[in-house]
Image (cartoon, rainbow, N blue to C red; front, side, top):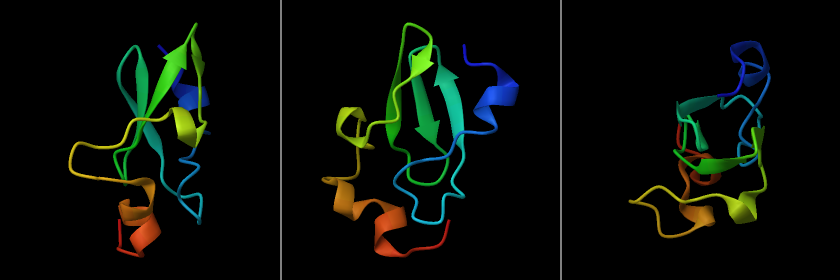
Length: 73
């Protein structure tokens, strides 16, 4: 698990305003609290590379994420 104080510093790289926080629903992923994009945690380190992230089930592409559509959080 990622330490809580470190997790508070992290932001979703897809949010242009860098306000969307991340939570850790399980030991293997971090999830954006705004758009639901899931980032892997490998060897205890978060990988915040968009190309390695998993889209939410109801989102067909990165450009369809809420933060890219201008919809409020």
